[in-house]
Image 1 (cartoon, rainbow over the protein chains, first blue to last red):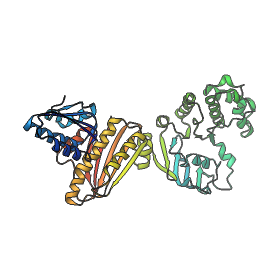
Image 2 (image 1 turned 90 degrees about the horizontal axis):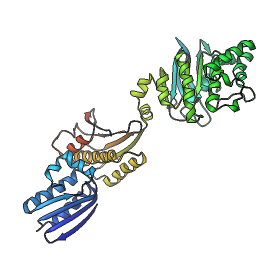
Image 3 (image 1 turned 30 degrees about the horizontal axis):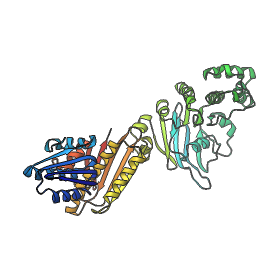
Image 4 (image 1 turned 45 degrees about the vertical axis):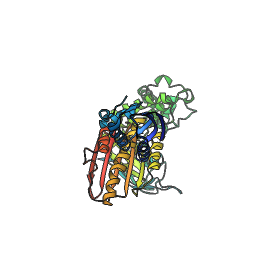
Length: 98
Length: 365
């Protein structure tokens, strides 16, 4: 998994690539926990993400919950395979996907 | 009534024993396709029947005559059995009609005129009357094989043995030979055909022998063998199954290594990306997120064994997970995210318990 962060005042863009699974999800979780303080606009760019499992979904959900309290979160660039997982799990309704 | 009875037939060569213990009866009018992987004794079985190979032990009885008895006049018996070889084996110095007439004239002492007349009839049946005066070298492979079939029938055999009759042919010529064999089957000729042409085997025969492990591993109707094989090796062969097995002995198993094995398996077998992704997800969601976390709680479910199968013939895949401990149904918590994902992506999911837990997932395109 690759994580690229770009900070622009209160807006944080996090590019996530590769696999977000049982092994890599804790890494993303830690990365987000450490960076969300003071952020009002979080963009998760997952255009390079190939695979997501429930472990990854839980991290996205937890980030969404945090951002609900302090601003907004947007998920961008999901490919067809990832969109299918968002669909079957109902995450299309939980996340702001663009 | 059985026409051929094979009892405890064994054939050993110095390094290999293709036939260990074959026992089977063949009835008049049977059209039997003999299928199976290479080196499982299919051709050896045919060649032991007409004594082109001498069996190491066992008996073959044809029409009440024990042909494996050294006192038996084998050339008389061989007249009852026509044989068609992969490589045609026509006499290149004789023209086509002479090839067909030769055995009836020399062995059955049929008058030449009658043998010619019958021979021409046979050539008509196989569609080659106009080639009667040609020599084998002037014919295509498919035509040569049709002549070889006419030559076998000319002896009025009780049974014809075909040893991979289309394996040496250009693919464009396979059809013409199969259609001749098909019409013989319709006429009620007893035949035993070693073949790799599965569709043909299914269409033409009333019985199929799947050979493996030194004998007839499974014997059944084409529907039984091709649609519902009961034994494991038959199933693997028929469905052209490719298997990957992963043994999980600890909750801290090598997840990354296992995923890369699944990916490699997918690449090797050209599994579609989406199906491969579903297999990876099923493995992760069900095993690591569900069964292993339950195992951490109870300490009872491991070791687990995961087998992934992919069928080339219908492009389906399945995953079976077997683990120990008391009955634990991983699908029981329907609200669980992992369960939702697996249920939605798999075409079928099931759990059963017979002293071991068995979970099966099926995937189709």
